[in-house]
Image (cartoon, rainbow, N blue to C red; front, side):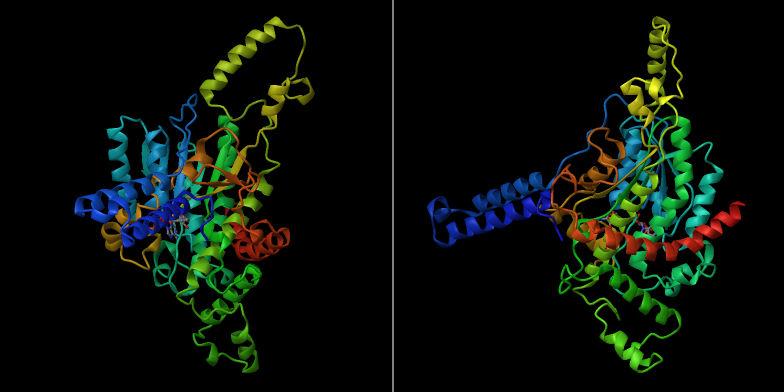
Length: 490
Ligand SMILES: NC(=O)c1ccc[n+]([C@@H]2O[C@H](COP(=O)([O-])OP(=O)(O)OC[C@H]3O[C@@H](n4cnc5c(N)ncnc54)[C@H](OP(=O)(O)O)[C@@H]3O)[C@@H](O)[C@H]2O)c1
């Protein structure tokens, strides 16, 4: 679940080593510990905590020095707390106009206020906006949000989409039975049945984000075309994607797990809560004895279903990377700011007047290798990240927000990450220029896989048969919603 290269793993290992070493010295009354007083022990504990904290920190994003981000627009979904909040805060600090999105207006407005205060303190010209709410468990809510954003695309052309929303549910709940979705703008009554029977963790972490990103592609493409700067999509995944829960060996088939959840979802939506009361006697027996049939998440295994949803995020990223691979700049522009482009154009004018060779800008063969490279630049770059472990509100179904804020957060920093630190890998994929890998997986330590050789991407995530099977499953869920949107546009 926690990959071996993570800085938190190193911090936890250092802590264990410290405890074992000094425990042994103390038990056997060796050296200085023979007469250690309370102050000595306190100093020892504090230095150990400090050492672990420094190790847990991880690397920070290297902001490109020659790029002016002022006025660029980022949409951060899941910005009201944790990784999304800190990502939005740091983007705004660097001059971005950041649109914050999540489900709850009050939390969003509070986040906006905090970020604006931070931006003011730093003397930055970043702007923060809230354009309403979105619930990734509801296709109606997603479609409505993207439609609103499309209406203001001339003023706010989004060039960076950070999908940082996420949920970790303690119990098995299906979209069609979620009380907070039944009323208002996020109504599920208009959702197709495939959507209503979705399990909520999978809906909010994987299926909703995929539909959201699909609907955002035309906007991101348009921004890239108009600004000559590659748009980016960053999906926040997790090392948990390697983990399908205790007692679930790596041979467990994640696709069958998804189908198992579907079976249960269909029954619940049809009004059958208790599997034993389901129709068809023998058939029910088969279902209940089915390895992949989930009645509810056991205490040990609910993290496994979260892991499954994060595995879907890894696949979403791969599917998107394939999808945008052919979307290239058609002009000799790309991955530069308008300012940089202006100075390049001036240089080019000067060199044109110096040469007698006639060149057509639309013709590849007539371009220099440098220009040719830019000609082939991707219009949309896609990556996913692991933020590291941090005491955010992700764990709000296990502990109340007060316990998370006041009891767990600060002690957890000995081996886990601050919100700021957990945003670094996401920022890296969002703004860094060098060594970017299309479809890559960026870690808080700064490395990326699978090309980096760091063994942090699960075999399931790299399995092409699973990817294809997942694509078929996913399209069965999102295709009806995408068709509805297309019809409305006509
Ligand atoms: N914290 C960790 O240790 C850790 C480790 C690995 C990966 N991650 C991943 O990092 C991402 C961010 O999580 P976090 O730790 O920052 O948790 P968090 O503090 O709970 O933030 C999650 C954000 O997503 C929003 N959200 C939740 N469900 C949503 C839905 N259905 N529709 C729209 N927005 C929704 C939340 O706001 P509302 O509830 O107001 O909507 C909140 O803004 C998640 O994808 C998580 O899986 C976290």
